[in-house]
Amino acid sequence: MTNIVDQITGHRRMRRNRKADWTRRLVQESRLTVDDLIWPVFVVPGANVVEPIPSMPGVNRMSVDRLVEAAKEAADLGVPALATFPNIEMSLRDETGSNSLAADNLINQATRALKQHVPQIGVITDVALDPFTSHGHDGILRGSEIVNDETVEQVAKAAVVQADAGSDIISPSEMMDGRIGVIRQALDEAGHQNVGIMSYATKFASAFYGPYREAIGTGGLLKGDKKTYYIDPANGTEAIRDAALDVEEGADMLMVKPGLPYLDICWRMKEAFGLPVFAYQVSGEYAQIRAAAMNGWIDGDRVMMETLLAFKRAGCDGILTYFAVEVARALAKKG
Ligand code: PBG
Image (cartoon, rainbow, N blue to C red; front, top):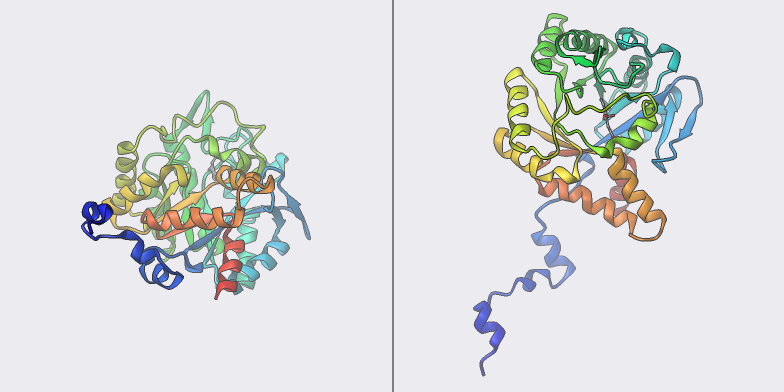
C-alpha cells in the first residue's frame, strides 16, 4: 500500500522529535538561564521610596535603600548584573547635563551602595546625558545641534567618575562618534583598566522608548527627536558599520536596542564580530506584553519567556529586560 505522505516526505517526518516532552527537551537548541539576564532599574532620590511607573506596570522607581534590597533578591536568584538609570530632581537638570559629572550624583550614590551591600552583582552604568539635561537629549545642545565632540569629552569624564564610584561596566548609549575610543583612553588613564565597555553599538531612533522617558522624567522635556544621532530603523548595514567602529575602538561587549524588532541585527552582529552581544528589550516592548496580558489577550508569562528565548535563538549572549527578576523567579521554580 502506498502512503502518499511517505512518498512525498521520503519517510522523513519532523514530528518524530516533537512527539513527547522528553524528545522535545533532548532536541531543544536554545535555552534561557538566569545567567542571561541583566536587570534595568530606575533610581529616585529620597529614602524608602517605591514609585510605580504607570506605563510600565510592575516596574517601580526606587530610592537607593530600596534598590539595595531589590538587588539582594536579584543576586540571590542569580541575576548577574543590573543596569541603573536615574530620575533626578528637575532643579538639577541643565543645558549641559552638568550633574552627570558630580561624584555624588544619584547614579553614583546607587553604585556605591550596591557595591557596598551587594558586591556579588555587576553594576552597569550609562553615560548618556539625557537624565541630566533640561532638554532630554543625550548630548550637549548648542543651537539646534547635539554637538558631538564636546559631548564625547563630557561623557568620558562622566565614565571616569562612574568608574571611581565602583561601576563595573560603562555603557555609553548616546551614539556620539568616537566615544568608545575616548572613553577607553580616559578610563585607562585613570587606572580603570578593568572597567569594561558595553557599547550601545546599534541604537535605533525608535518609538519603543516612550515608557522609559516617563520613567526618568524626560518625556515632557524632549525637544524634537534623536534622529541626528540614533540609527534609522530602516538601516541594517549602517548599523553593522557603526558597531564595527566601536569594536575597533575597544568595546568589550555590544548591545542591540530595541530588541525584538531588531533580531536580524542581533544575528548579524554576532556573525560579524563574535563579541558578546546583548539585546535590550526596551520599555515599549515590555509595556506591550504587559498591557496585552493585563487585558487577558495573551498569556503574559509564556510570551515573556518566548521573547527571551527568541533573543537566544538570534545569537544573543544575554538580554537586558525589565522582566529579569520575574524570569529568574520562574526559572528558579522550574529548577
Ligand atoms: C537614552 C536611553 C534610552 C533608553 C535608555 N537610555 C532611549 C531614549 O530615551 O531615547 C531606552 C530604554 C527603554 O526604552 O527601556 N540614553
